[in-house]
Length: 310
Image 1: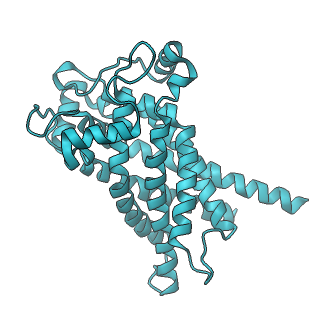
Image 2: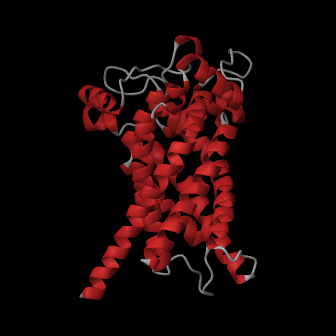
Image 3: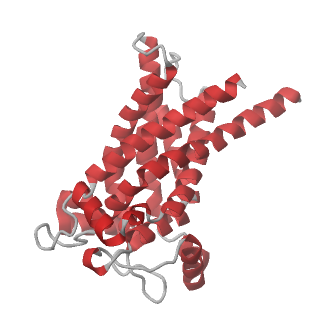
């Protein structure tokens, strides 16, 4: 009975540490998320070259936001971003690490399986992303709102996280808070799956071939960086679709005026903006996700080591 209780505590700690690990990383990378959101909304449903680029890349985006919104503007939507990242990583890393602990990510030969890691990473990502969907919705709307000189996309003025939740709930109820949640599924499965299908098997490969560092922190850092790079490539198109779905204006029935859903958004963006439209804001996405992924997985591994020592 005592051993069962201890197992339950260890399993819960995996979930809790997953959420906590994301907090520090989010504070560091949120300014890049603001720029990424603006670039993804810029030139919405317009052909390339037919609109004025108010943000000419990542660096110019930082300058524009700092100039018009002030330095604090670079941390817009931070509270919502923290809520989303804590929620998604609570479930994502907790489910994946539990699956790893039970041996569900290993192939018959005992090595870490890329496909099984992809599956459990994707499942964890979907559960966490759907649970945290209202935070992502509010984060997108808070980060897109700015002065008219540099405004892109539909503008909603919320006076912070709580005001945004109250406004959305008052207008459309719980359904309004979970609007576009289906768009979270491909984003979460592809992004989380690609990251964890790279992270675990890469660590396993380095260990089996004696290529790993003697310091486990270095291993976590290197594998996290590689995993973050894979995640950035996989997550950008569904991330753009989700940003567009969450930021579009609504009719009186609470339905989107631009897009009817994930596939409608995908085809409209592809038809109007081409493949370039599906990879708008890729570099700020990469600059955010690569270090964020590295820090989250690094913090998570370090907390597990500390827990085991204690």
